[in-house]
Length: 268
Image 1 (cartoon, rainbow, N blue to C red):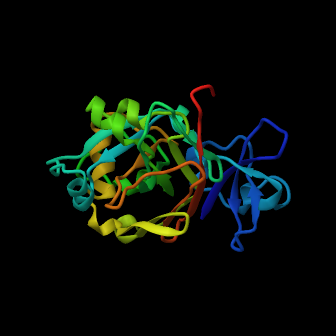
Image 2 (image 1 turned 180 degrees about the horizontal axis):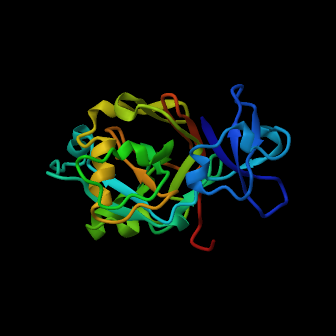
Image 3 (image 1 turned 135 degrees about the vertical axis):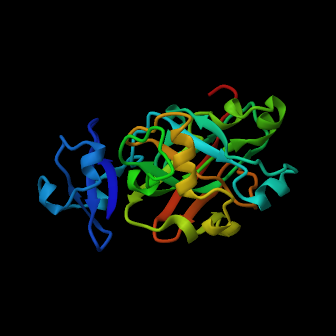
């Protein structure tokens, strides 16, 4: 099942919908459905006729209360930045204000001279997860999977040591375009391209900490609410983004997230 969130041009409201098998139309869902109910939605929950994708504006496919990110979850990425691998997941947060949708622009802040892409598998939580135990099944708490670009001001990250400022600028968390449910996340192909050239190319099987382990671990640190997003870490090949670049994050069986890059002057 492929889930989207959208709005009609020149309107303020948003709706959830299911993308049909052709990938060209959306079946709108009832407004009253919660994120937990959307996880079990079918065509019977539709309200109205199918709508062509070209008639709507796609929004970020969820509205998380928090974005939980995992650092150094691929050994080759840790090595390329000169870091050692952690013994347990290295967590940090991105604020919801950093979120943008598919086809929206990543903005380069004038205070940074080195902004980089980080393509990642995203996990969207479907029901409340708190203090999961070993006998719990973490994947039962997943709504679905999406593409994430954990955009990072690398120079600021290195200067500050901790990650908050370098990861949190407005527009630094593109994700989407859809949430795809009922996938096995253990061995998906992840690729990032800039202007068509491949920068990152890996499989999720290379992650040090699996999706299942991450959900259980995070739930014992903070409660995960429906709609929350986990960015599971990036493989090697991170590199700079420049004004005018076109960056794509593609994940097998999930889709392609596309964003333009726009420079901002200090007067903006």
